Image: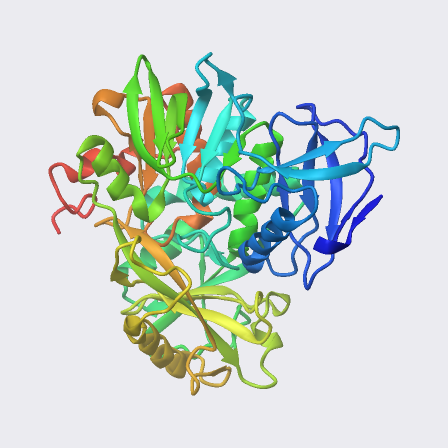
Length: 521
């Protein structure tokens, strides 16, 4: 064992365990204020690096950057690397001694030519290149890699960043949708969540009840109850949230057992890790600026000048979709980024436990104007997430992903009023939300997804998944499977088998009607 006191890093003896791709694991422990989480897959070397898990995954990025600085300045490290460090930029060298101890760490450029098949000119070739490593791209990469494809997953920012729509500690899931064509996707997604968790040996989805509230004559609520198999509950009966919610005269409540809370950042990491274990290459800090078709394959160019070749490509860049698609094809895809806000409110003293999953408190939605939704108290003790479905148009490149804005009062005050009307005995609204986390929606005019071939010169070689409109996270495993099948097979057999009609998610729906599926609106 070699102790590097200057960087507070202890290098432990290397195990001889080989992975399926020929790598071994070298275990390190960083003695700092918290432990660092991530599994870095290194290319063209015999060692990979693993760090123990953070208590709070949302501070991963800051802790990771700090550790990289420490590694750069430590003994045996390159002090002037030739390019910014990537997650896979750490190469561990070992002596040819029987002890097999780590003796030095060097910073190297990521993604050597052995990542994918080389073409003799230094270009990297893959079966599928996924652009955008949020939840949708990560699920698509996992689905493609699960079928044996050589997959490259590219992310313009850091892994697990907070600039888009896939970060944070919670997303709600439910079965109650007013639009019946989502029902097959919801059922498929729930099954795929279970399968992925079983494969990972971890849990990112906590099942809870679901409660829907709204006027008795609200057509959207009535359709959601019918499509989701929910049961209308009455006064005097036991139902999730009874004793917490005040249901006004003329309103109704409907309960279902198919709610749940998904740990968002942890879920993204789970799918990226599963994809990596199946051979996918995950490369962050790599901004794609062009996608073209050349000599029968897809050429992906990055801002740093790298080029990657793929038989197929999947574009899942969230709020940046319209910009990238416009620059690549000239098409104006109607996906508008919105700035939104996730608000966390303080439970009144003595009420904290009533709002937890352990007390069977539900995920919930209120079919009012505006729509209000919430999840049980999980991620921050004593706080509960209650927010408004909506936001204001924004430019993702001029928005600070970690800051709130002066316009956020419009996203807070309606929620505060709703809490005073519906949960006055349990939630404190005097001090406003104690925590507010900015997020982005990628809105389409009809709030339905886009899952389609890009068409034109690309034909069926490039698939786009976008416009998830603030309600797509729960369906990500199904979306990823569908996008991967569309790219690899030219059709989505899983969608057909599940009874899902993909026509509702086509780009062509906007050709004759700018409002898409809102026919006659």
